[in-house]
Figure 1 (spheres, rainbow, N blue to C red):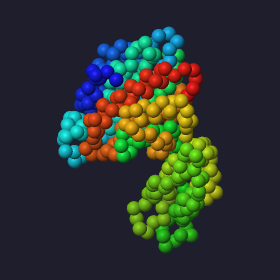
Figure 2 (cartoon, helix red, strand yellow):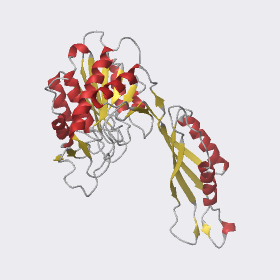
Figure 3 (cartoon, rainbow, N blue to C red):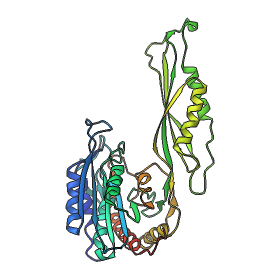
Figure 4 (cartoon, rainbow, N blue to C red):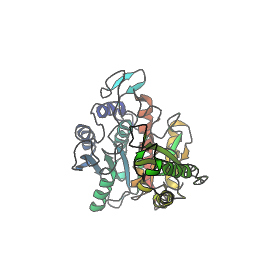
Length: 387
C-alpha cells in the first residue's frame, strides 16, 4: 500500500455528517460523488419511487460509479448502502455530527456502513486504473423496504450491459475483531401473515358466535412444533418465529370477529420461499385460516473457492487472522447481487450497528481500507473464471 492512502476517517466523517435516514437521498450522495469523481469515476445517480414520504414507494436515490480499465480487463465491484436506521434518542452527541472520542469515531452509520464505504473509496484510490475496471453499486434503500434500491441498480446495469466479475459488499460482518468473519452466503427470509375469520358475539352465548382464536392458536401451535431441518454444511437450521398475534377486541365480554398473526422464517438452501409458503398456507387452510406470504429473499451461497481464498488471504495479510467463512445473520443486498456475479460480504465489527452511540475504531478503518485494496487488486488479477 502507498504511504499516501486517503484519510479514511475523514472520508467517513464527511459521509456521517450528511443525515441519511432511510430512504436516503441528496447530500450524502453529493458527498460520495465528490470523493469518487477526482479518482476518475464516472458517476450516474437516479431516483426510483414516487410515493409519499414514509411509504414503501417513497423516493430512493441510487448511485452507480465506474472507472473503466483497459479493454477486456476484469471488473470488480464494491457494493453497499448510504441509508441508515433512525438514530433514536439518548446519544452522547448529535448522531450526525461525527465525534472522535479516544480511538473511536461516533456517528450514525459509522459501522453500518458509511465507514466501509469510506474504506472502499480509499481502496479504489490505491488500485491503478490499468489493473482493471472498478465500480461502486450504492443504494439509499437497504435498511428500508429495499424495493427501489439495489434491484433498481441491477436493472440499470443490465440495461447498460455492465457485468462485474466479482462483487464485495461492505456489510459489518466481523464479530469480536476486524477480520474474524466473512459472509459467503445468507439465509432466505419470508414473512407470512395469517388471518382467521369468525363471528362476533357475547361470551355468554358462544353458540351464537364463532370464535376464531382457538383456530388461530391451533395454526400457530402446529407451526411452532415444526422442525424445518437440522442445517447443512454451510447453513444453520432454518427457524420459524411467531412475531405478532392480534385480535381487534377492546371488550372483555365479546368474542372477536377475527384474529391474525405474523410469522417470520429464516431458511437455508434446503428450502425456497415458495415451498415454505405453500406449507404454511396448507396448515392455515386446514384450520380454517388464510396465509399471505411476503418473500424478502432466497438463500444463496458463494461456494468457497478462488474468491473466498483471496478475501481470506487479504484479511490474514493485514490482521494475522484467518477469517471464519459463515452464512449467519440477517439478510443483505447480497441476496440481489448474487444474480449478477459471485458475491462475498466483509466489513467492520458489528457490535454497535443500529445502536445508540454507534462507533467504529479509527485504526480499523485504515486496516479495512488496506484489506479492500488488496482484495480489489487481486480480484482484478484473477485469470479466467475461477470464482
